[in-house]
Length: 165
Image (cartoon, rainbow, N blue to C red; front, side):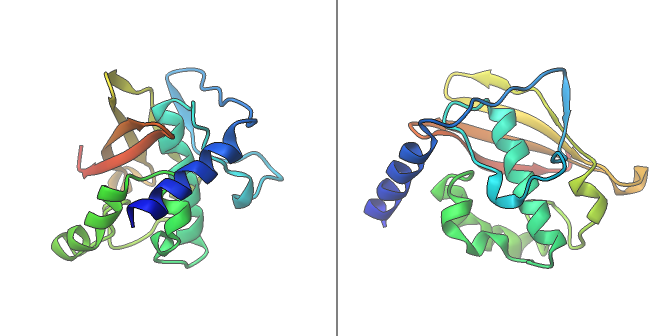
C-alpha cells in the first residue's frame, strides 16, 4: 500500500511539473468552471495554494455528485490527488457515524452548490492550513465547512473536513 501511494505521488508530480500555476485573486473565489472546460481538465498543481486545492477538489467532487455518482471517492487515484491517504481511509467510518456524506456534510445534494460555493483564502501555519468553505443554496441550505490541509512533497492535501463551521 505504501509503495502504491509513492508510485501515485511520483506519477502526479511528473504529470504536474509543466502545469501552469493557479492564480487566486480576491478574498473569495467562486467554484464554477469557465465554459468549455470539462472534469478531465481539472488538474491539481503541486505548487497550488491550499485554497486552490480545496476549490479544485470540490469542483470535481460536486460535479461527480451532480452526475449521480454518489461515491466519487471510489476513484482512489483521483481522490488521492486531493486527500491524504489517512483521511481517505477514515471516511467510511466517519460516514457511518455521521450517517451522511462527510465531504458535503449532508445526506442530500443541492445541484446549485457546484455553481455557488465559496472558498476563502487559507490561514497557513507551517505545514498545516485551514480553509473556510461555504456550499451555498438558499440561506437555509448553506453549509459551512472548515477544511484542514497538510503540505506534502506532492503539494497540499485535505486531511479533514469539519462540518458546521
